[in-house]
Length: 141
Image (spheres, rainbow, N blue to C red):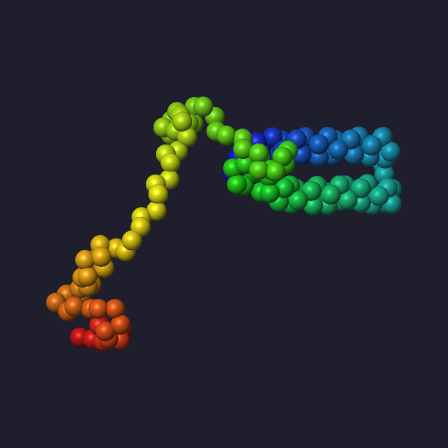
């Protein structure tokens, strides 16, 4: 997960929703502030705050999915699908990967040593060849 990139999306969403909430408080104060509010006005104001809270909660849940889709695989998927973003130089230095990871070794070929030499698998003093007896008989006491 690219947390350094994801946290920027989180901060942007947080700032947006906090600003919208502050604007809502200012609008409610301007409309209903300055004196005692009637029960109907209180209900209207509470409904406005509740609607805002519902929008924030829904957006916050969506943001988690967006972050996972954009950053979970170590690539930046929102600007250009699969665009590599790399690692900071300090991390590469600390991990010993200045030139990247070591190449993957080629797959081993052939059968395992025990079968190449015509041997068999031993269990204690008993010699077992593949398919020579049932599995249950190998564990009888």
